[in-house]
Image (tube, rainbow, N blue to C red):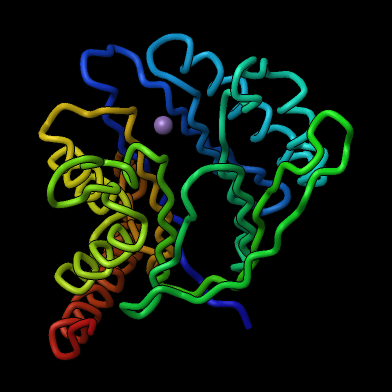
Length: 276
Ligand SMILES: [Mn+2]
């Protein structure tokens, strides 16, 4: 039986110092009929408008191809063939992370050149087996995609960033080689221990703010953190409408009473057994 959870998706960003536009692009989309959510993060090379255009192109293609179930290799090839290539370094102008979440908890993550994403489960980093896909077409020969799948559980948090986060603080005495994704994972675990119910948005904000601090409050790159939190669904009861038929009022009141009563019981249980 699959657990029921709500998929909370959020993303926080800081632009490269002095830029008014972000060169990292985050997109997400629902495929309601298939019970899926696809989330994409792309980092366009450089910063400012040019980076933003490249990343928007990449993210849009990645999102739409993934929605349509195109194979990862094909998606990657099309993106790489569409985008211009840096003439000196023979590198593509943008990177991407694609996360495909099914409501039943089956999650697949595909990465190209972005820092490795990670999953926090029960205050630990979930161990995953990454598979390397090497592209074979003449133009993109040797380029590597990383892919892994896992079954998500209630409480899991998937955290993914651009290199603006992992390389924050680069060259400072504290982090001569940058903050590093291991430190980002440790930091995330600490935050989740401190605030077991922290929302996707708040966790992403804390990570971004720390990266910003590492960079001395002048971001050296566009900095993005996305968080997907498989959380306990929250129930909401909306009561509205004019009282047309008085004789139905007690029934209406009973629904509200039952709902509120259930909430109080749940609240008591939560107080008696705080989440560990
Ligand atoms: Mn970057």
